[in-house]
Structures are given as C-alpha cells and as structure tokens.
Length: 227
Length: 216
Picture 1 (spheres, chains in turn orange, purple):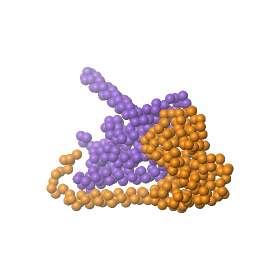
Picture 2 (tube, rainbow over the protein chains, first blue to last red):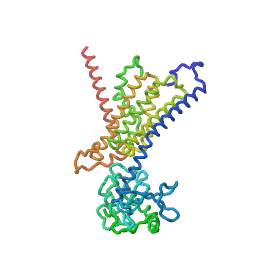
Picture 3 (spheres, each protein chain N blue to C red):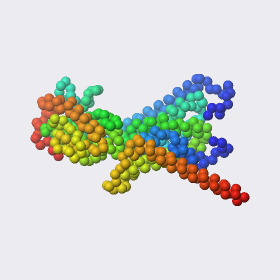
Picture 4 (cartoon, chains in turn purple, yellow):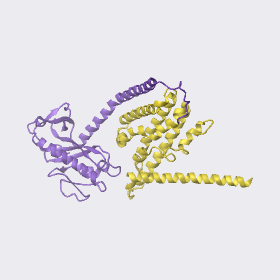
C-alpha cells in the first residue's frame, strides 16, 4: 500500500490541505446526514406514534380515544405534553367519554436487551387485560415468542394482579394471577412478568389514590369494556 | 494483483467466488454471525451492505485524486459512515419492522472490514468503472454468503425459510442453530464445504495437466 506513490518532496501536500480535505469531507457528510435525517423524521415519528396507538387499542379493548396522564403533585392529571422526565400512562376512553382503563408502559431487562412493553389495566376488578411488546431483542425462535406466540400473549387477556403475577411452568396455570411461561424461554417470560409487577407496584397505588382526580371525572361503570 | 490489464469481467466474478469476502477472505464476520439467524435478516443486511459498499467504492474511486494519502483512512470512514447513516434512517422510515429486528447491526456496517478493505485495496487505485464492478462483485458475494448462512440456520433452527414453514408441525427445530453457537458451527461447515470444492477443482486441474503431459 505504501510506496505506490513517489516520495517526492514537491508531491507532499501541505498540512493545511490535509485539514481542509477532512473538514470539507466532514462538512459534506454533515449536510447529507442532516438532509436524510430531516426527510425521514416525519415518517419515523409518525410510525412510532402509530405503533403506540395501535398497541393501546389492542391492550385496552373498547377504547376509541386516548389521553396522556401523569402523576403530578400526588394526583393523576391529564396533560397535553408531559414535562421532561415525567412518566406517562395513557387513559383509554370510549366514544361517549367513559374511562375504560389505563395503558401502562413498562421496561426492564430481558434475556438480551431491554424489553419495552405496554399493558392494559382495569382498575375495577384489578385486572391486566392485554399486553403488547413494543421493543425487544429476545432470541429469535425462543424469546421472541413473548410476542409471536399467541397462546402466551393470551395469558394476559384477563389476569388478576393480586397479590402479584406469577409465571408458572407451561400447563400448570391454576390461579387467576398465574401465566403459563414459554417452554425454553423461561427467562424472557419471567422478565415480562417482572416488568409488569414492577410497573404495577409503582402505578396501582397512584391509580387507587386517584378518585376525584381529573382522570376519573366520569362515574365508574360496572360494565366498562369487558370486550 | 499482478495483472497487466484489469479485465472488468474478472474483477466482477472474483468477488463472487475466487475471492469471496466471506468464504475465502473471511472478512466481515460480525454481521455474518450476528444477524444471520433468519434468511430475511440476512437479505436486509446484505442489501444494506451492498448499498454502502457500491456507493463508497464509486465515490472513493472518483475522488482518489483529491484525497491525500495521509488522510485517506479518515476520509474513507467519513464516506462510509455517511452512507451507513443514510441507509439506517431510510430503513427505519421505510421498513421499520426489519430495522427493529436488525437493531444495532446496521450502524456497525461502518466498521465492516470488508468495506474499508475494498476502498484501501481496490477502489482508491482503480477507475470508477472497475471500482464499481469490483464493488458489485464483492457485495453480491457477501450477500450470497449471508443468505447461505441465514437460510441454513433458519431451515434447521426454525424449520422454515423466509417465514414459510417447510416441514410441518412434527419437525423439532434445532434451537442451537439460531443461537450464536449455531452461527459459528454453520460458518465452519460452510467454509469446510467451499474449501473442499476448491481442493477438488485443483486436484482435477492437476490431473488434467498430468494427463496432458503424458500425452505429449
């Protein structure tokens, strides 16, 4: 590689020229990257929001509209935009403005990388009614069954949170707070359960302390969205 | 390459077989082992690498007169990184599902040694036409190798190809094949196979030579 060019004194470029070359390359590169970023940003953001919305409608059956809620000053408050660092949950409402339940995001370590998920929670009956994995890098063919295996996902369609959710060996589900773990992907199954339990520990007391807050301006209906 | 007159066809074909970046040069192993657990991932990774390699090679070759030797590596990396960022953003915008699956491995194309290797060894000292042909050959060779590994692993590890079930419900997947050890195992076996083919071809040629010598 070296020695292909003649080592002539006159042929050596000046230091300034070297810096200029790199600076110019960097400048052009920056221009191209910013253009690409700007032109793809709308569709990327739109896609992310669409995915989130679809996930909410899936985990909270019967929902037609959403409101963002945060826990602020000890109360559950509906907000347009959360402040930086605030955790958001989504309240799902029916067409006539009744609150169906809450979609709560959670994240935690899986087998390979962080799993991010969203689950639907009904305060009355204290039940999880749906779970969607938003983001995960679990092993293809094994751990990815946490979202590809319909039977596993169905575990979360009606799941009691009391005293907490427990993953049991496949086929041994006997109580309303148990789920059948995936054979060969016990760690991923337990990770999902742990994420939901952790988020529950944080949010359930807040949701219970919420009566009278803006989030529940409408009277609780006993028949809210059980499919 | 001690060639007097570079021949475009030869430059193209060498990447496919004689100097295949994976099976002969054993370059670019990171994406090779990491994302080939299904044929679909292999195709997307192969496609992204194809775009980056062909783009960078053409540009490097076209700009070779203006890039001083002292800063060439830094300049090549800037060029490659720009192409990778563009393909990364485009994939996220156009094929978000696959982009999610490949995760951090798209940005890692920047440090695929096969790509920088081609710039250094070929594109920076040949005409744009030859650089393009060389890049096309190498990229297709790389694509082919990724696809070979990805399909073998998906067929054995999941029992399907490109998501189409092949063996019916009674097939017990060899889960190890889609885990990292399966990648090494498959790559080793494929290398063995290709070297065996090469060996056989050489033996055949030697025997032909010997026969010719006897005949004369």
